[in-house]
Length: 612
Image (cartoon, rainbow, N blue to C red; front, top):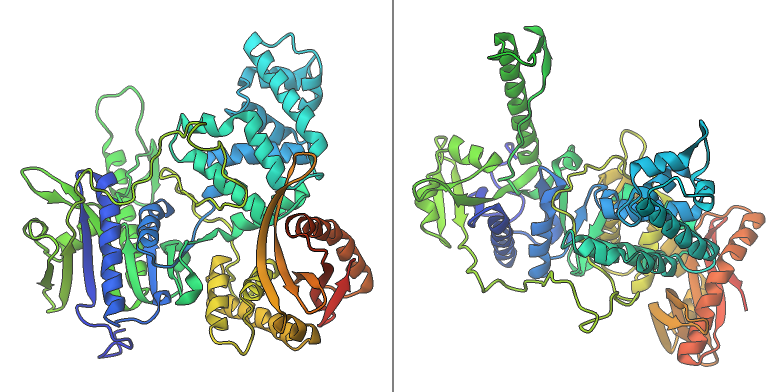
């Protein structure tokens, strides 16, 4: 801050650092830049320049830069939360599967049906879809068309249409009658979709594992509820790293767009070497020249068009500088700029994007420094301010650490799918660059905490059996709120307050005493079992504990309930879910538990409902 002579934290100068990685190309250099940065942050934390990882925020020009930095954070066991965009659920392979799930939920949804038929999973041509849709000059539902005469289609399209019909015939009767996770796995098996994706892109088949993990985590049976659940995940757009974020806070990764109006103690301008793409339009409308366009089939370019193109380029450059200013001024104490260098001409090194602009503007002799790797350099600016520069050494080929194989696994090597109880890691596709369209973030006075987010926060606390008087509850709820996408401070504090209120209500209830004094107690207990009909039942039990006399199974609900009618409706809705939990406990542990629902918000009180 310009108003303080000394930093609020134990930050030591220089207060601006440039951390670079080196590689033969951007693909090799970007991971090296990320690893060098994380090593520097660990060094700063060990030196007590900051106390918690939540003091650090990574800001990106585009969400496609997340991957390398997430991998480096995970590899070095640094907790992180990525406040991401809608990218995952808008990826082509996920969108195709969701189209089919929409068809299973509503077979008369012609738009979703067209998406299913046109996807690589089915592969019907556009002409065939047109012929199916139109008959004798009138439209007809695609579902009806698939069940009728297909002779007017080409043989290849006929086979595809017949295959689509067989898939729907097999799966539609199972909708809302088995867990969505099991139905989704069966769908992917029938389509052989994981194998199809593995032949086209090394990462996309792993995205299906992530979708399966989301389905398993939802524990939902109704397809409509699952699709609403996915919409919530798309709107929130947050994912958490593998390290335990609650232990000491978490580094936050987000786009500069999402960071507007926020401030952080330490800001990393990450992936600063990202190249800004140039574009050219066939026409420009500018104040100085009016409408300027480039006619076809002429030699040369009109002067008015060239002037308009120049003015448009200057405007883009000004916008990039403004965005860079916004990112840099999010830092309260220290700014780190992370980017990569690649070989240039005549044994030189070159940077791109904002990193190039920063280096050139401040006269940093990057070629001289690049030859002295793994050494700190200090560069004095014209205003006497010091900038630290660190160049990481390139990774030696053949000695990369923890490289994961992307070869397609054979059936002999491992099962085609992981068990449902395993969690798949989100792998973002590098070509995706989708900004978030709508999120939980509040503007103005709209800071009401979303009930779904508060419910997830409460369950996180109950899982760890942490309540209002316990140390670390606020930090844990803050991390959980960030995971739910609540980056606005006021909205996040409101959510934490609401969650604490529900937890205090449970803590003050007599039922809590029995649980707290139980002989054995298991929170968020996962299970998976094969039923007699061959179907897999998988889920997670909120609480299973033993008193001196009996085992008890509890499922906590944070739904807001204000009358007895809604209470009874909720009991009936959750009864099948508790029935599955009970059957699993009986089958796997040979225990016959008492089963209860615990509603934490029934007219401002805790309501226990015994179901057995």
